[in-house]
Length: 134
Image (cartoon, rainbow, N blue to C red; front, side, top):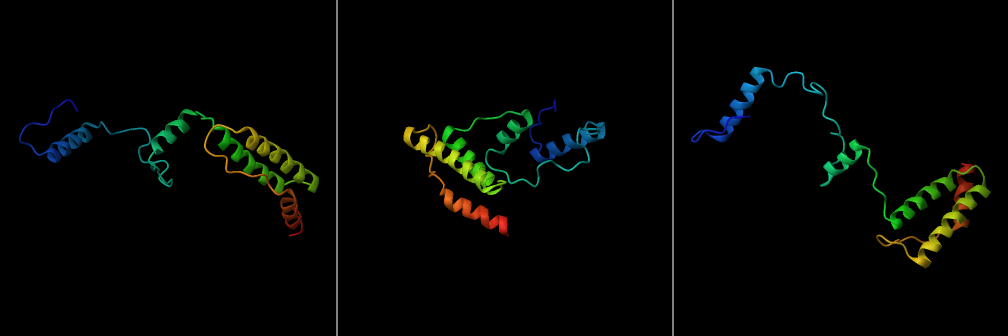
């Protein structure tokens, strides 16, 4: 919009006129995505939605702080143990993540508080058995 709003003309009227004239000149014709739904309307937008969208569109990754990375690994290990092919495999997965959790508790990791304790391997294996029977 090269023109400046003339003095004495209400702002909304000036904007409406600029849009109408641009439409008449065809400046909105053949825009990318024309006639298509807006992307990500189904997503809940947080205050930082635009940063997340930029990171996603650029294919960037941001490493998690070590404590959060270990929490994520623990969640994945629990899911892996519950979906294991054998009781031995389930127990091994839990023992390996428990070793990592104990090491992190002993030495400390940077990032937010770990808030993670080793899993009860017997309880996890018992849950694995129940899933196998049901």
